[in-house]
Length: 168
Image (tube, rainbow, N blue to C red; front, top):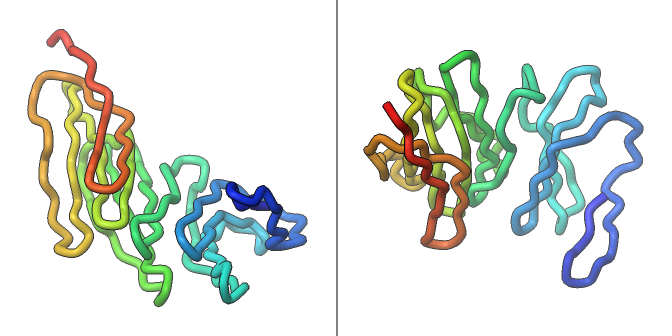
């Protein structure tokens, strides 16, 4: 279920008896992972149209970061060892893409309607913050020092994160 925070009224979206988890909300969309067909699938629900659509299968839903919304994109990160892909589905069309593919370990992920912010850790235990601009699909490194950056959070034109000194 979902509650409208300003009115505190529950919206019963489904009567499913399967596992539904990792919800995300943005504007007119709700998103969640559902196992109704025996495998984990990412779904989006259009609140105004009261329609639901299956977006994409998720191989290992317990190992992903997200999903979270970045504008009309639904974004999640999947890691295998130290390799990380930041994946996205454009909800209106259902088209999927990989925004970022790297050999570094993902530490944290945040999003606004225009940007993704994420922290990646190298093999020396140092991490940096990166910004990915959705409109141009360009990446920019925001930090480059001997500190451990983690827990990015973003709202509007601002991103913040935790920085911890690292003794190399």
